[in-house]
Amino acid sequence: MAIFEKGTVIKTEFGAPIEIVSYIAGGGQGDVYVVNYNGKRKALKWYKAGVMRDPDAFYKNLKRNAEHGSPDKAFLWPDAVTEHRDGTFGYIMDLRPEGYYELGKLLGSPKYNFKTFKAATDACLKIVSAFRILHNNGYSYQDLNDGNFFINPDTGDVRICDNDNVAPNGTSTGILGKPRYMAPEIVVGGGKVLPDTNSDRYSLSAILFLILFLSHPLEGKRWLVPCLTDALAEKLYGSEALFICDPKDSSNGPVRNIHTNLLNRWGFMPDYLKDMFLKAFSKEVLFTPGRRIAEVDWLKVLVRFRSDIVNCSCGNETFIQNAATTKCDRCGKNVVVTNVLGLPAYDMTAAKGSRIYRCQVGICNADEALDPVMAVVAKPTGELGLKNMTSLVFNATTPSGKSKQIAPQDIIPFIPGIKIEAYGKTVELK
Image (tube, rainbow, N blue to C red; front, side, top):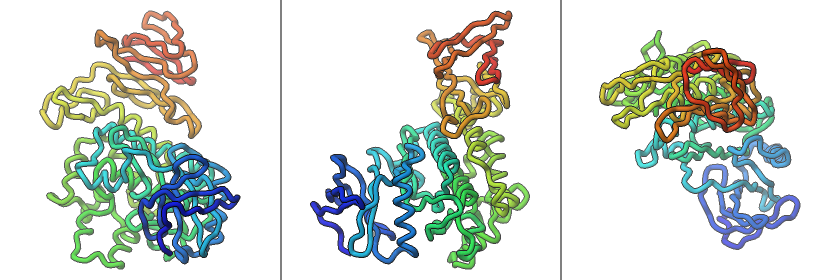
């Protein structure tokens, strides 16, 4: 089918007009346009005829998703489906915001790199949080890969596209996923094993590893072959999948001068973060879908990691080890940790900008996991304080035993020994 010309009018299934403004891009499934819809600029994805295995089921799933609405603002979710025209159809969604780039571009070009490691970590947090909410709403994404994410490299804010494949967990849209990101059981399943929440969680772990280490978790020395045939790819990503950092088997390990990013970053990362990836890509978890890392466990590790990213006086971002003084990997000086927050499960670094999130203090719902509870702020004099970021009143106890209430937006001085009760748990200033 030819590209729609400017001014062409298509209608939704309910007859509302959609006017073509301009062409954005095309792909294997179809073409994307800027359109006018209900007085706003939106995006239209229009499918090519004959590309779907079961177009009627696909259309019904799209319509159902549009009717139910987006589970989280991060998703560029279908707003409405169109009428059928020339044997095919499309759907309306929000446009990608300005300043957001496809993840593949951020990973492959220094021009679009994340501005800071905190921005990269914020992107990871927002991706994980969105998929936790998606899964808790009974959906599976089914085609999670590096082309699904538009990210602002300065802030780490995320928009997730290609939500047309999202379906209730346990049902299929006929899509198995994208090579390099499909879970091993999908790769070796021959089309008989369908994507679900567990396969999503494998792909999610792969995306997080790519963002933080700029390397694919399964593409080590075994990947360096003259020609990656289908048979070799089935082994590399499926039947013989092996983590590039597997501590017990180095046969797929990183190669110097090729996996430079991974070799540079792995050694400086906190042990608790590396341990999560070692678990996520262990042979036991790779080949046992039901043991994949749950989103809430990723959130708990990532919010801790975010607080342990501290700027050295030389300007380098340093990853603090166990909330203790750590040597900068650039200048060699000690980055001194003066203040620490004692959380129920571990201690975290308390520096200006550090935050305590809801998922770090007691059990919480998916949609409140990243709600800020407290934040470390600096007074004009440079002294640190702890700010109540909630709408609740917390009770604090001083080292001498005196009680003080901390109202919303109140700031208390960072004095070691103060204990704060929040959501039935204790946070201690150290």
